[in-house]
Structures are given as structure tokens and as C-alpha cells.
Image (cartoon, rainbow, N blue to C red):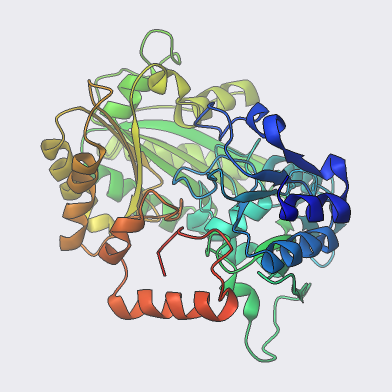
Amino acid sequence: MKPVIEALIDALGEQAVLHGARVAERATSYWDASPTQALAVVKPRTTGEVSKALEICHRHDQPVVTQGGLTGCVQGAVASNEEVIVSLERMNAIESIDPVGGSATVQAGVTLQALQEAAREHDCLFALDLGARGSCTIGGNVATNAGGISVMRYGMMRSQILGLEAVLADGTVMSSMDEVLKNNAGYDLKHLMIGTEGTLGIVTRVVVRLHPLPKSCNTALAALTSFEAVTQLLTDMQRDLAGTLSAYEVMWNSYYHAATEPGGHPSPLGREYPFYVLLQAEGADVERDSLHFEQLLERSLESGVIVDAVIPKSESERHALWEIRENFEAMLAGRTTFLYDVSLPIRAMAGYAEAVRQRIVARCIQFGHIADGNLHLFIQPESQDADHLASDEAVYAPLLDVGGSVSAEHGIGMEKKAWLARSRSDTEVELMRSLKRAWDPKNLLNPGRVFSL
């Protein structure tokens, strides 16, 4: 047994440190069921135990990889046999909820859905929302600056954070657990942890913002014949719903058709339309909001902006509509799939999507949040030996002409490292490296992720 493993067991106990054959009993990630590879898996329960673990690893020059819900899409949390995994799965306590002050204090291993449900019990809303809500964790949401379906109204994860606690590479605890919205006392160090994918420190506790729970929720699935109609509907709804539009999810025909194939979801509308929009508004007056929402849809139908629509009449019907957008496992099953997550100006979206489709000799499935400039793509080549790099080039190269980013909300990890320079200047990347060298001079935290030193 290596000295670093012995030291970790001595400090944290045998049950907190998995090593040997026990490591391989765990799946690599949500996307990869193969056995985990790692020197050991450490499962701390407190910030203090994380601090002990990192101090030991720092003393032994031991590289560390942080894991949360394992739903990441860019291989940022996939470890090698020479790395120690620090898993925050046991740090899953919701410590407090303050409905008056509009905040909650949680450990990093709490799942997004658990926090959402706990907030609802206090008539509060935690506004971040993702399809992976049942497994992704708050710590992972912080590390990747997660986005999701409510960004247009509430912002990304960065906008939901009041304070946080993190452990640096040498075990030092940085605690900035603010519960106030305003604190301009010097540098706001917490922002250096948000979106840095665990390369500067391990986030262990977070203070998040809560909002009053909306009383009304109105949803519709609409069919449209052009992307111009998609943007027109967005403009109309943002203006006329007066800030209550919380979701605007766009599905190209390629996505909707795949989602409603035999064995997939029932199709509430015809499957022949070029675009489908799932929109949702949340407000404070159940009857008035519902009437206004339906009137706006009727006006859009009469003007020809939309050609067909369906409004759910129950929670089960609403859930069925969202399942079309969020549950895409059937279209991925048994197929080689390359997942992409890009952002670009809305005005360039239609041209970019078509340019990618023409470059790809494979099934190209397109969908996204759109209102915040976020487009997702599933590229499904016929061969399991398809060239992933060629697919990357087809997706990322057209972004250069429109000022887009190779990562809208999933991060860089290992998978997109070679493409970072497509979205960040040499000066920006060098400043990132300077921060990494200053905060983690031994390059022990998630080494090789985002960029190489």
C-alpha cells in the first residue's frame, strides 16, 4: 500500500478511503459504466476532512480529482490510476434555509433536486434547473457554472451564489460564506472558484440565493415553420409576458423526430414541422396569468408566427411535454454519440446550425435553450470508429466566424482542452495559468483539465 493511502486511512478512517479492488466497483460516470480507475477514492463528510485529505495529498505530491454527481459531459472528473478521487457524495446536508433572507446553506454533495424540493417546502424557489437535477450536485454546478433551462430569467449558477467555502490545494480552507447580496469589501474571491472545474480548489459548502415560489405556471409546446418565427415568438413573449418567461427551449425537427420515434415519447403535435418550442411562464396570479398566456398564443397562431400548439391541462401532461425535451436516452441508446454544447449570438444561430449540418456526414440532432444563445448537438456517426476530431472540427470551426464559444455550460474538462483557444485569447489563457500556478503551484488539483501548465 502506498504511503499516501496509509496516511489518508490513518486520518479519515478505513471506511472513508476505498482502494484496491473496491475502486473498480464504481462506474466511471453517468455516461460510462466501465469500472472507475483511481489510486483511491476518498469520501469525506466535512470541510475539515477535505482539508485533511488535501493536506496529505499535497505533502505526498499526490494529484487529486474531484467528483460530484458524475453527470459531466467533458471528462473533467474521470481519473487515472495515478490519481486520488475526492468524492463529495457523503457531504449531502442541507444545513439551513432562510426564507426571509432568501438563502440556503448546503454542502457541495447535495443534489440539485434535493435542494429544489427543500426550498419548495418553504415556499421558495431555487432557480437553477437542469435535466440532470436528480443526480448533479451543487458543488458540480458551481465548478462548471451550470446553466440549464431558466438562465434567461434567473442567470447561470454564478448568479445564484451568495457565498461559498472551498479547500485549496495545500488544505487551506477559504471560507466566504456570505448570506448577503451585497459585499464589496475587497476582492470577491468566491468568483475565482465558480466555473474553474476544481482546478483552483474544492468547493465544500455553498450559500445560494432563493426566490419566492411562483404561484402560476403556464406551459405550451408550439410548432413553427422557420427560425425567424422562433426568434419572433421569443421577442413577443419576452415583451408581453413582462419578465415572467422562464423557459424557452427550441427543438429542431431532427431532435423532435428522434425523440418521438417508436420506443420514444408520444408526439402531441405533428412530426413534420421544422421547429418546436417548449415555453413556460411563471407568475403570481393563477387565473389572470393563464388567460393572458392563452391569449398570447392565440394571437401568435392568428398572425402565423406559430402554426400549431398544445397546452397541458394537468401536471402529468406538463411533465409529458418536458419529458420530450429532457429525456433523450432512447435516441442515444445503442448509438455512438458525440455531445456538443456551444453558444453564439442568436442572430447567427440558424446559419451556424445549417453550416454544421452540411459539414456532418452523420445524424445531426440540434436543440437548445436558444434564448441565452446556447445550442446543443448530438452527432451520431454510423460507425463506432468514427473520427471524433473530424466531428469536433465540423462543429467548432464555424464558431470562429460568429464569435461563439466551444462551451456554453458544460465546461472544458479534458475533452475540449484543445479547443479552448477558439474561445479565449492567448492573454486570457495565460492569465488562467498564472492563477493556477499561484493557487496550486504543484499542479495537484484536477491536473490537465481545462488547460495544461
